[in-house]
Amino acid sequence: MASLPVLATTQNNTMLTSLNNLPKKILFLCTGNYYRSRFAEELFNLKAAKLNIPYVADSAALALERGRENYGPISWYTIDGLETRGIKLGDDIRHPKAVTPEDLESAFLIIAMDKLEHHPIVTERHPDWIERMTFWDVADIDLVEPPEALAKIERLVDALVKTLSR
Image (cartoon, rainbow, N blue to C red; front, side, top):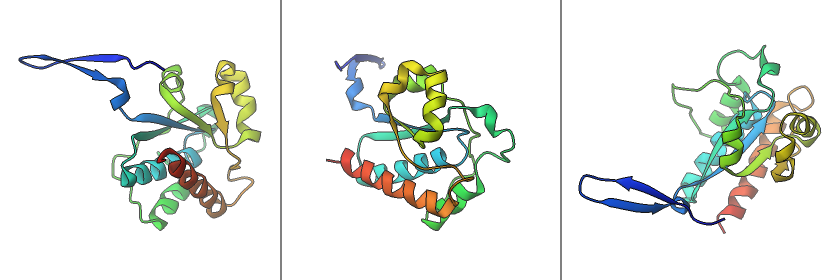
């Protein structure tokens, strides 16, 4: 992709900055943006920052309406999984959000947490994006216990960070 210029003005001059200097976005998707994708986002951002690699993660829901029974802004399992790994979330935790066309368009890499669960949702709601997505194999809480699922996400995030840091 060609480097697009961004025009930034200061008091005395105008600077031209390349978008390539901005961090590339990794977008993690799951059904409700409450548990798996949020864990992947937080873990990735911590590991990428430690290695000083130019990537930043975000996360969103493919089917936000399916999380009506979720309580609070983020799953307790996510909070516990992060704290077990020494990661403390701040006090300003956002609520789950639905994926937008802008999220998809701005992503360098799009990862859906579970192919079996998410491929049909993407096919129905975002068919033009199916070829750009990577699908992991991390099932939701009704199929896999949280410690096992979070450990698998951690292994996958570690492998992703290692690949991106080369």
